[in-house]
Image (cartoon, rainbow, N blue to C red; front, side, top):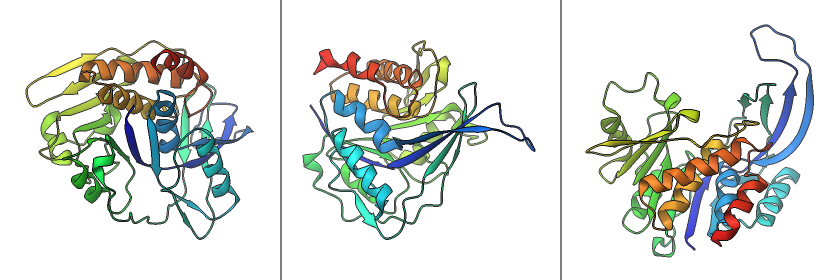
Length: 281
């Protein structure tokens, strides 16, 4: 079991199920799919809890009924929420607009700036995962690097993400470089970078190092909802690496976790992943 700290959002997703694919100027009917727990904190954390790890989440929610609901739901799932901060005001819903082919459009509210407190004692944590742009995240990462495995998702902009393992999707890389994959990753992650993983859905993923690159196949799945697939992939990679696996083995585990995620009608991991993980605990 590893002690894993997540810097990630905790969301209340509101699902709008459209009757047809989106197009400019169109008119659509929708069914309200209700609220569900979501965000990178839940999508990544729950699977890691099921795998037997201790998982704590650093995030921020409003001091309102939705904020209360989010904390209760995440705690019930086994995530340690004592480091989640409450802010004045409402916790706005994240709108997930789903089309019949399983694609989704995310409409998110503007988030208030969240300034992280002083970093924790990193000797108590085996891994830090960064999937947010909280103020102070770079400082947390840099202080964690000598003590903990640091895994980060590439941000939507080119802000620094100091880490040992950087993860991005191929779509994140469009019109972004001019550099080689490794040189670009180094410009984001710094000299500590060991691996740069670029995922490409059903085509699998490629891991780049300073010397080479390797391809890892995806695991075939019946795609129902792609929301949270990247979070589940990252969780599988973190589980693999903290369990002593090689990077390729960890990516294979990430592909397995992601396949369970896309086959589930939720962004948080489905029950099939929990059943898959039971023999490991």
